[in-house]
Amino acid sequence: MSEEELVIKIQSGDMNALGELFEIYKNESFKYSYLITGSKYTSEDIVQEAFISCYKNIKSLKNPEFFKSWFFKMLTRIAWRYAKKDKKSLPVDNIFEKLDEKNIDTSIEQYLRKEQNNNLYAEIEKLDLKQKTVIVLYYFNGLTVSEIAKVMGCFEGTVKSRLHSARKKLKSSLIKCNDEYNHRNLKRVGLDG
Image (cartoon, rainbow, N blue to C red; front, side, top):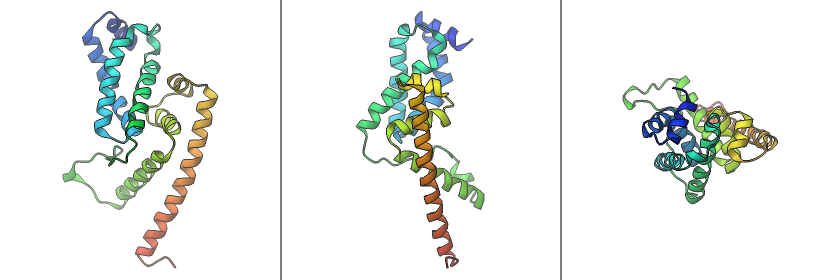
């Protein structure tokens, strides 16, 4: 059954269709919320609230083919509200790499990849909320500039500008992190000078 058909069924009150739509979007929604808030538990609350709100407001969606943009707009607003409420620093799990503790491979390549992911996520966390949102929607959720503009309620040019500024900040920060990381490692093995 297509996504549009599921939306029409939900609009008719079919809770099973809501369950199917939840299965389609739960992981993507959780990952998105997590990347915005940095908290697993807060992300679970956000996703739950978004689907409840989705069910309550689904009849206001006139064009079922725009469900994804409509849903992510709602999810974004809820995530922003939680992010503003939870300004305090929270410990962050590494969402990029979930490994079974028994099977952790300590190879140099995996260690470097993990360090790069940690550095990237740390730098994304430093972006302002709107820049972080466009980066997450574009790179982690695969939305187009047009879809992001609908989600965020702004012009496509604004999205492009935020993406450009965020990329520029991330590039600069990651180059600096990489230089510092390399210097620390060279110093540690006695090759810094």
